[in-house]
Image (tube, rainbow, N blue to C red):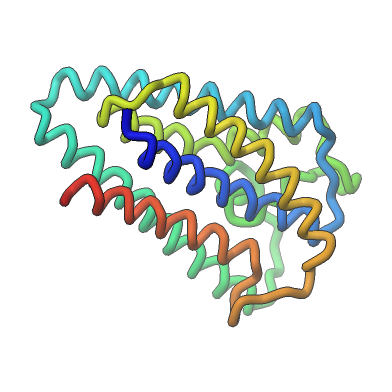
Length: 207
């Protein structure tokens, strides 16, 4: 079993959730432990389904082609996150005059999951947030499944990483609301780093 790849996948998905947690902490939005656990469970299920599907794809494709497919998949996902961060930074430099909704907007601005502006993520909002954050776990799982990684262990660490990252991100976000890395907020930088790690995983499996 390739524990290095599993560790990198865990770090990548956790950084994504850490960035979301930072956004909540900076905005003063809280997430209860049980709702955070639900988000982690959704991450586990999405990751597991993705890996199982990836395993079926690997059976169809020759070994070399399977590895190339997985590598390209990680590369594309990582590049998407990097580009998403650049777009997010550009939008933050402009005054937004309209409200948007849906999973896509929550991925760009996680704090918008708090739809009723209560200052706390409720159960329906936690489900929506969990789905939004787990879309990457699903696509990461496809690549992991094609590479033949363990469905349970990849999903377990994805869920554990999600829980810890969201919790720690919120705690830290309250304290570092004003911290920036260049023109990026700390949350934006963590998402950028998540994408960069996935690109490295893709390159690692191509070489």
